[in-house]
Amino acid sequence: MIQPPATLGMLGGGQLGRYFVIAAQQLGYRVMVLDPDLNSTAGRIADVHIAAAYDDRDALQRMAQSCAAITTEFESVPAETLAYLATFVPVQPSAEALATCQNRSAEKGFLKTHGFPHAPYADIRSESDALNASADLFPGILKVARFGYDGKGQVQVSNREEALAAFRQFGNEACVLEKKLALDHELSVVLTRCASGDVKCFPVAENHHQQGILDHSIVAAQGAAGEQSIKARSIAEKIALAMDYVGTLSVEFFVVDGQLYVNELAPRPHNSGHYTLDACLTNQFEQQVRALCGLPLGEPSAHSAAVMVNLLGDIWFANDPGQASEPDWEKLLAYPGLKLHLYGKGEARPGRKMGHFTVLGKTIETPYRTAMAARQAIGLSAG
Ligand code: ADP
Ligand code: MG
Image (cartoon, rainbow, N blue to C red; front, side, top):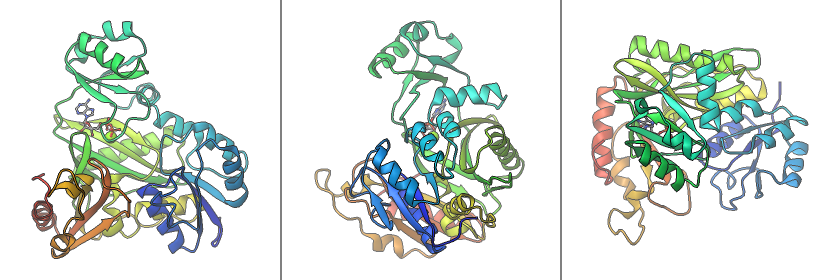
């Protein structure tokens, strides 16, 4: 067990890292953040921020010497970085698990090999792969295998010619072509698994996306409806076991005709788990700290129903498309049961995640109504 005031290492300085820093510091730990951005939102509140590249050997040496254990908030850190650090200190998740989750092709290969339900897909590694793709995969979505997020690096394609054009547009980078499914809705499970094998899942969130970016999550206090929720959690736990995953893992699901399909895995806490900050006895970031330090996992259950709404940089431009201005937060803060979170990022840009708010209540109806009214008050279109 790693005792406070040990220093914990965090690879990545975004908002997920920031909440890890807060959770770790609350438990008396110190945190060292590695992120090349001098102004990173987690780096600014960490005990130490090393502004260097994720493969900078001097920086990694420093982390290995200072940190009792290291984790990540960002799946695109090189897997070699985790493997290197793991030769000196405990690292969660493993380099192997990260390598699987950071590459859509490896991830889907893993799901396929282990018999987990997923959308029909094909690996597209060459122009001839695109031209010979099965007709069943159209209309489909061509996704770059690496570095895509928030719907970036994805194009809808209706036939082989469009798949080829999109593949070329991505610079002939390895891609996957996935059949476009008619989604009823989407779900996610965030879980934490300890080295001992103990697993705790948070209540299942129902997720609604706009333009490939999470817009809002709805969580009844017991999680999404009964049987489907139990099934989603069971699949997520089996995935963690099959990967021998240690740390916090997020599993996104599509629901199509009532059936669950695993969409993708994130080897870290997740935007759809932000509701846990306000609605659960232990939040997803504290759970990540606990697993990293070998502490007992916390109780993940929700004490309230919750609706979480993302605040993207777009609303900074609601008054003037050419000039960012601070939204009128008073309008949000006036709603009862609404908790506002802003990440302290310097510059607002369209599509950039700047913050979120969560509305809490005993049952889901009131927070849902309040959240939808609040989003309109702050200049977001109806969800
Ligand atoms: P990202 O890494 O950007 O989150 P995802 O693969 O999760 O990438 O895609 C983002 C969103 O786009 C999904 O949450 C879903 O709303 C939509 N989407 C992705 N793939 C499909 C698909 N095969 N069929 C229907 N919708 C999809
Ligand atoms: Mg996704």
